[in-house]
Length: 487
Image 1 (cartoon, rainbow, N blue to C red):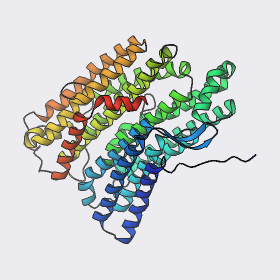
Image 2 (cartoon, one colour; image 1 turned 60 degrees about the vertical axis):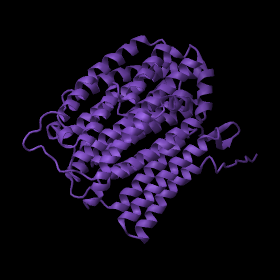
Image 3 (cartoon, rainbow, N blue to C red; image 1 turned 120 degrees about the vertical axis):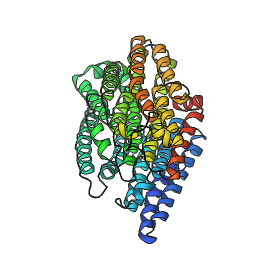
Image 4 (cartoon, helix red, strand yellow; image 1 turned 180 degrees about the vertical axis):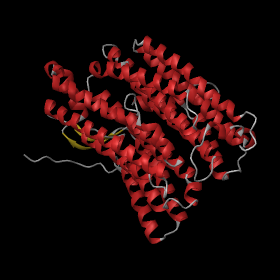
């Protein structure tokens, strides 16, 4: 029997644009051999990818690589949102990388090519319909980051961070692949929707010890990517050793990729009654440990890294409520998924804005420095300092950081709708705990500067990039994001 499989090239257009950007960057670097031309090609390609994802997403859900009703690539509203966010994050990191690239310690062509490859993996990840496509897309997003972390010439800290990230991520990938193989042995399929239907219908299959082990391995492997406790130890050291723009990309795009992958398997494939309690426990551990350790940090990037660990806990919390929401209304389950996606989107935009401000306030080829190095920065550079403070306030979930406030309210509302009031209380208590270090850093920016803390003005383009990112965060339509995430 022959199977006829059609290919929808319109659905694949965003992936084509992202992959084409990587190829064109290589050609521009080879043929033109000018840094400005290479960066321009990468910038135009990322912008085209964002527009392509948004354009295809407005036309409704499109499916391709289908056999019967099982499809390996499904591009709808959520995939469009994820693809556009990945492309915009790539644009933002390119804007932040100007001072670093001009310093001459990083090859421009390789840097832009690796960013474009990571963007291509992120675009495909949002539309993955089976476990193989999902894992390959996640690794396409992650593999270039190993090199980007250690790409700075002569940096021992960068080399150590790259090796740490590589070893931990390879182990996480192996664990995820083993879990996927065991799921295939149990159910005989890797398509997410079909796998979810089989496990939901077959009580005996769901209760097999092999199924429990497979689910645990898949969740644990993806928890590494999200930097959830206890799979988080690689994140602070890797972020601190990487160049600042790369640390920004790790903290945003890499974490978003892990969240999207985890959401896909939890929502469509794995039984919520099994994964819900595990994710609820991970969420509580992650937000609590992240906030407590962040209180003790004196280095800026490590504080932001531990902050992002805590933020991962807030993202996981709605998924943890699915065990309680599984027997409730479909609206409660859909609200939990949408809350996780919306929170992830707002978090990565605010985190990118915070890193943009750090880049603007630090030397072009330097690291993030200590909190004392930023003392009085808002007095010397009021626009950049104000943008940084606004980003921190948004991450804390306070007004006028409307995006962060909306995100936390959305998570708490989803938890209450899923009858997980105790988890909503833990989120609220951790949000109060997080205020201590966010407001401490914001107060440091406006404190009286010491004699050696004054910094020369950084590139105007970087400062404007930070302010523009914050404007996008505050002005973004929250309900529009939530509606797309629910689709």
